Length: 214
Image 1 (cartoon, one colour):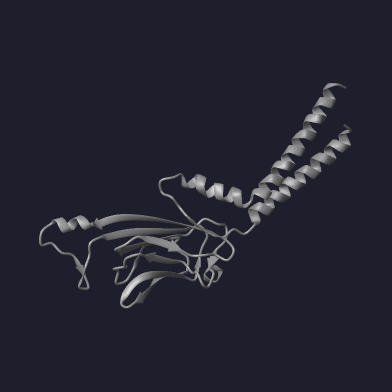
Image 2 (spheres, rainbow, N blue to C red):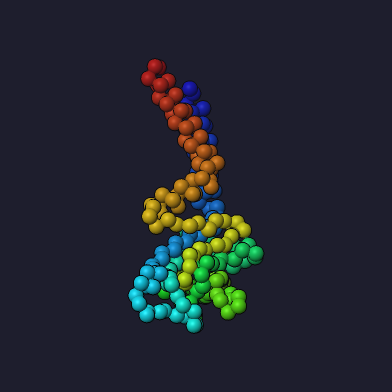
């Protein structure tokens, strides 16, 4: 292989790899994760205690839970409220009812950003089963944590127009889950990068072999 041809191949391959890397790094990614950790405060076993009753607004409670919900922005872009599908904002549902008079935020990071997070209750016949998460925008790497009291199962729903809202399994490796998702989403980019690296390596090996047999 002529040395000029070798360096030409090297230049083209290197430029392709660098361009793809900058494309991948600079591409906007809007991804949220959420994690729900639930603690049982009162179970239906309380009925085994004679004459003991727990009530909320005159209704007897058999099961009471406290759930901590953590929402994180793991993408490389801020997320605005307009980025959500209007018919499917971020909201928290329960099969029972929420008991908080005012759902409260435990913590939010970063603290120096001028954005406000809040939860709005949606009541039907005086019972709240749906709480909507409201915000102006969620900065990069932001972490918002809420605590809610409820009587049934709980789940979070929502849909980004251009992005993903990912449930985190606290029993698994979150790092692997996050980057496995990114790998699947950008498999074509990774394939192109791999192809460029392979071409560059092949050219280098061919050049070395040619030098050995000169």
